Image 1: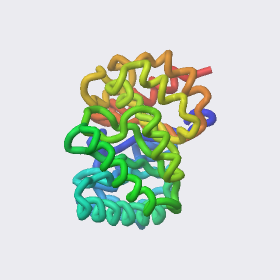
Image 2 (image 1 turned 135 degrees about the vertical axis):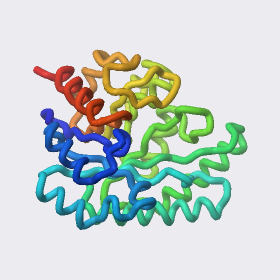
Image 3 (image 1 turned 45 degrees about the vertical axis):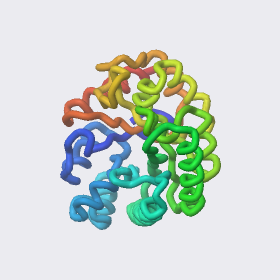
Length: 259
C-alpha cells in the first residue's frame, strides 16, 4: 500500500466477522494484511480455520497478523493457576499463528487488581515467569502498550522496553493508547523505542479507548507523519465502526504520507 511498510486492518474492530468479507475489503483497499483476533478463533473455531485462512491468503495475496488472546487471560496474574492457564492458552495461540504463517503477532502484558507497590512487584515477577516460557516463538511477537487505566500492568516506555527486551519481542505501539496514558508527549516517548515493529493506528479523544477513524479524534497526525515516514514495519488500522471507517482511515493515511 505504501512504500517501506505493510498496511492492514483489524476486521473484528470494524464489526466484520465473515472471513471472506474481511479479505475482500483488504483487496478493495489494496491493503497488505488483515489482523485476525485469536480470541474470536477460541470463541468461534469455525470463524478463522487455518485451512481457509491459507486458501484466502493464496487467492488474494493478502497476508495476516494475529492479535493474541487477552479476554479472560492474564499473564501477570497473582493467582498462579490463572497465570498457568493463560500461558497455556498463549502457547496454543502461538501454534495457530505459526499455522497461518502470520507476519507477526500482538501480545498484552496483563492486568493487576490494585496499583499498590507490593502488587506491582509481585505482578512483575509473574509476568517474567510467563515471558520466560514464551520466549523463542516461531512467529515474531510484539508487546503492546496498553496502559489506558491504572489496572493495566505495563506503564510507560521503560517498563514496556524492559519486558519486551527480556522476552526478545518487538514492540507494538498503539498511538491511541499512548494518548490516553499521557497525551502527545507520551506518544513521542514511546517512539524513542528502537524495536517498534508493529503499529496500531486509531484516533481518540484521549479519555477512552475510542478506536475512531483516523482524523476524527485529537491525535496530531502531522506530528506522527515524521515517524510514519521512517517506519518500515507493519501498520494495522485498528478502527471501530464499519468498513466505511476503515476506508476513510486508509485514504487518510495515504493522503498523510503521499509524496
